[in-house]
Image 1 (cartoon, rainbow, N blue to C red):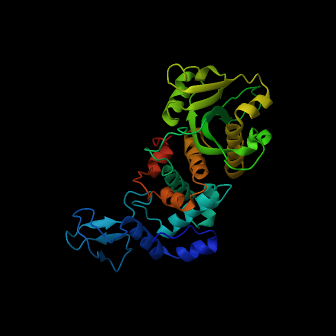
Image 2: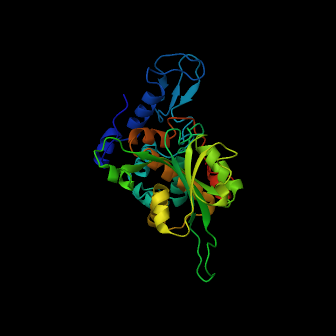
Image 3: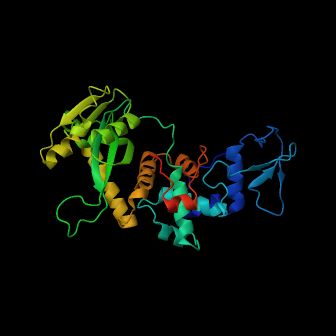
Length: 331
């Protein structure tokens, strides 16, 4: 039986006190009705190796081994399961997030490279390829922002900054008992599902594919009057609500309040946790973590399982792929 999500560190330690408890949890999730050999489909109690970790089980019928961590971010890892579980818990529960330096110190990991790789492997499980498009029932606000970069001594502008485009559902609370006058203000609105992605530029060639890949066709989308969104209605079938901002913050607050709030919180998180030092080629991974935590803030146990790659087959990056730049973080 899946435990309820631990709400404190002592409670987490009681649920997962050691590697054996983590192994038992993984086995119960993978085979809730008892062991089934992945090779021959035989059922029955597997052989457990007494002299090594029981992450590997052996079928008594076909003599093939089965790994508890196969298809998860922990696959082929030499790091203790309890470290992976603690890492996933800290990543999901610490509101400010966690840098690799903090992660290394908290979990007593010898090398920062190992901590960095574990965190990125966990982040690799935060994007489901088959995830649903947003906006099927609610309007969607869409806008862009600039992240990172240094502009000192180079004049005004956005030198070295990375462009991030975001889309968030605009949901409304029902039955709040508020007056009609207050029903139109932003307090009755709240953010639904979120999507964020790094894009090359602010052209229609970059922005429109983001919208079509993440927002349900026919949805009502709200944007500013930027030319990059001009084809959403005529060519792609969206109901397009446009406002000319004219440099007035009041217009932005009225037309796109939620996505601007998302961007503000994102920048605060990146500055506070990572001190703004996020390499552009890794930024998408941090966006994925932010989106994952945001969208699953009401479902912590599901998020915990997902970030370990338990809920779906996950192919994590290798050390060489991360440091060579060959690994492309999913969007």
